[in-house]
Image (cartoon, rainbow, N blue to C red):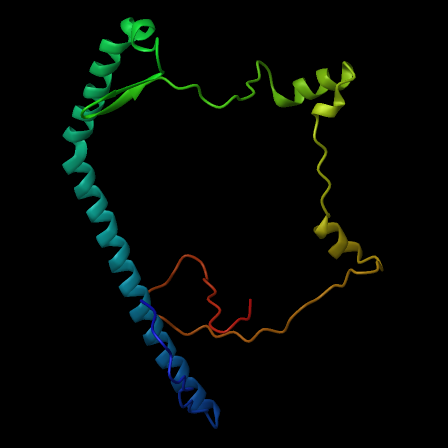
Length: 179
């Protein structure tokens, strides 16, 4: 079900005319952000409490489920050859069980670095991937003149209202940034 937007209207913005009015807006911003932070904190606490409640509620159900899977495996494993002579899955009225091959994967007996050395030593470097990336930190440090590369800084406006609740770090939230 889609809704049709009939009209979009810009809100009236009262622009301060002096520093006292700007300070009043900052006070309002602090209160508004405190209200937002309190609501978000309450939401996080409620979510954490719900997760804890559900985990407690499901504790015995998870144990029962795991025991049922183990019982089914204990029944099926010694009979695997017989059960899988026609197909790898056994379909019953209440569900299906069986065996499947996992997708192939590479497992290393030693560290990745050691395997890379062995592969290069055995002239099998084709199995070693080389990934080239820009060193942006070095570009910013040295600022070489390169076609297609520019060094940009923006002058961004910020507001830090005084708030009741102090956060351990400053969080930035862009309200109108074009992505």
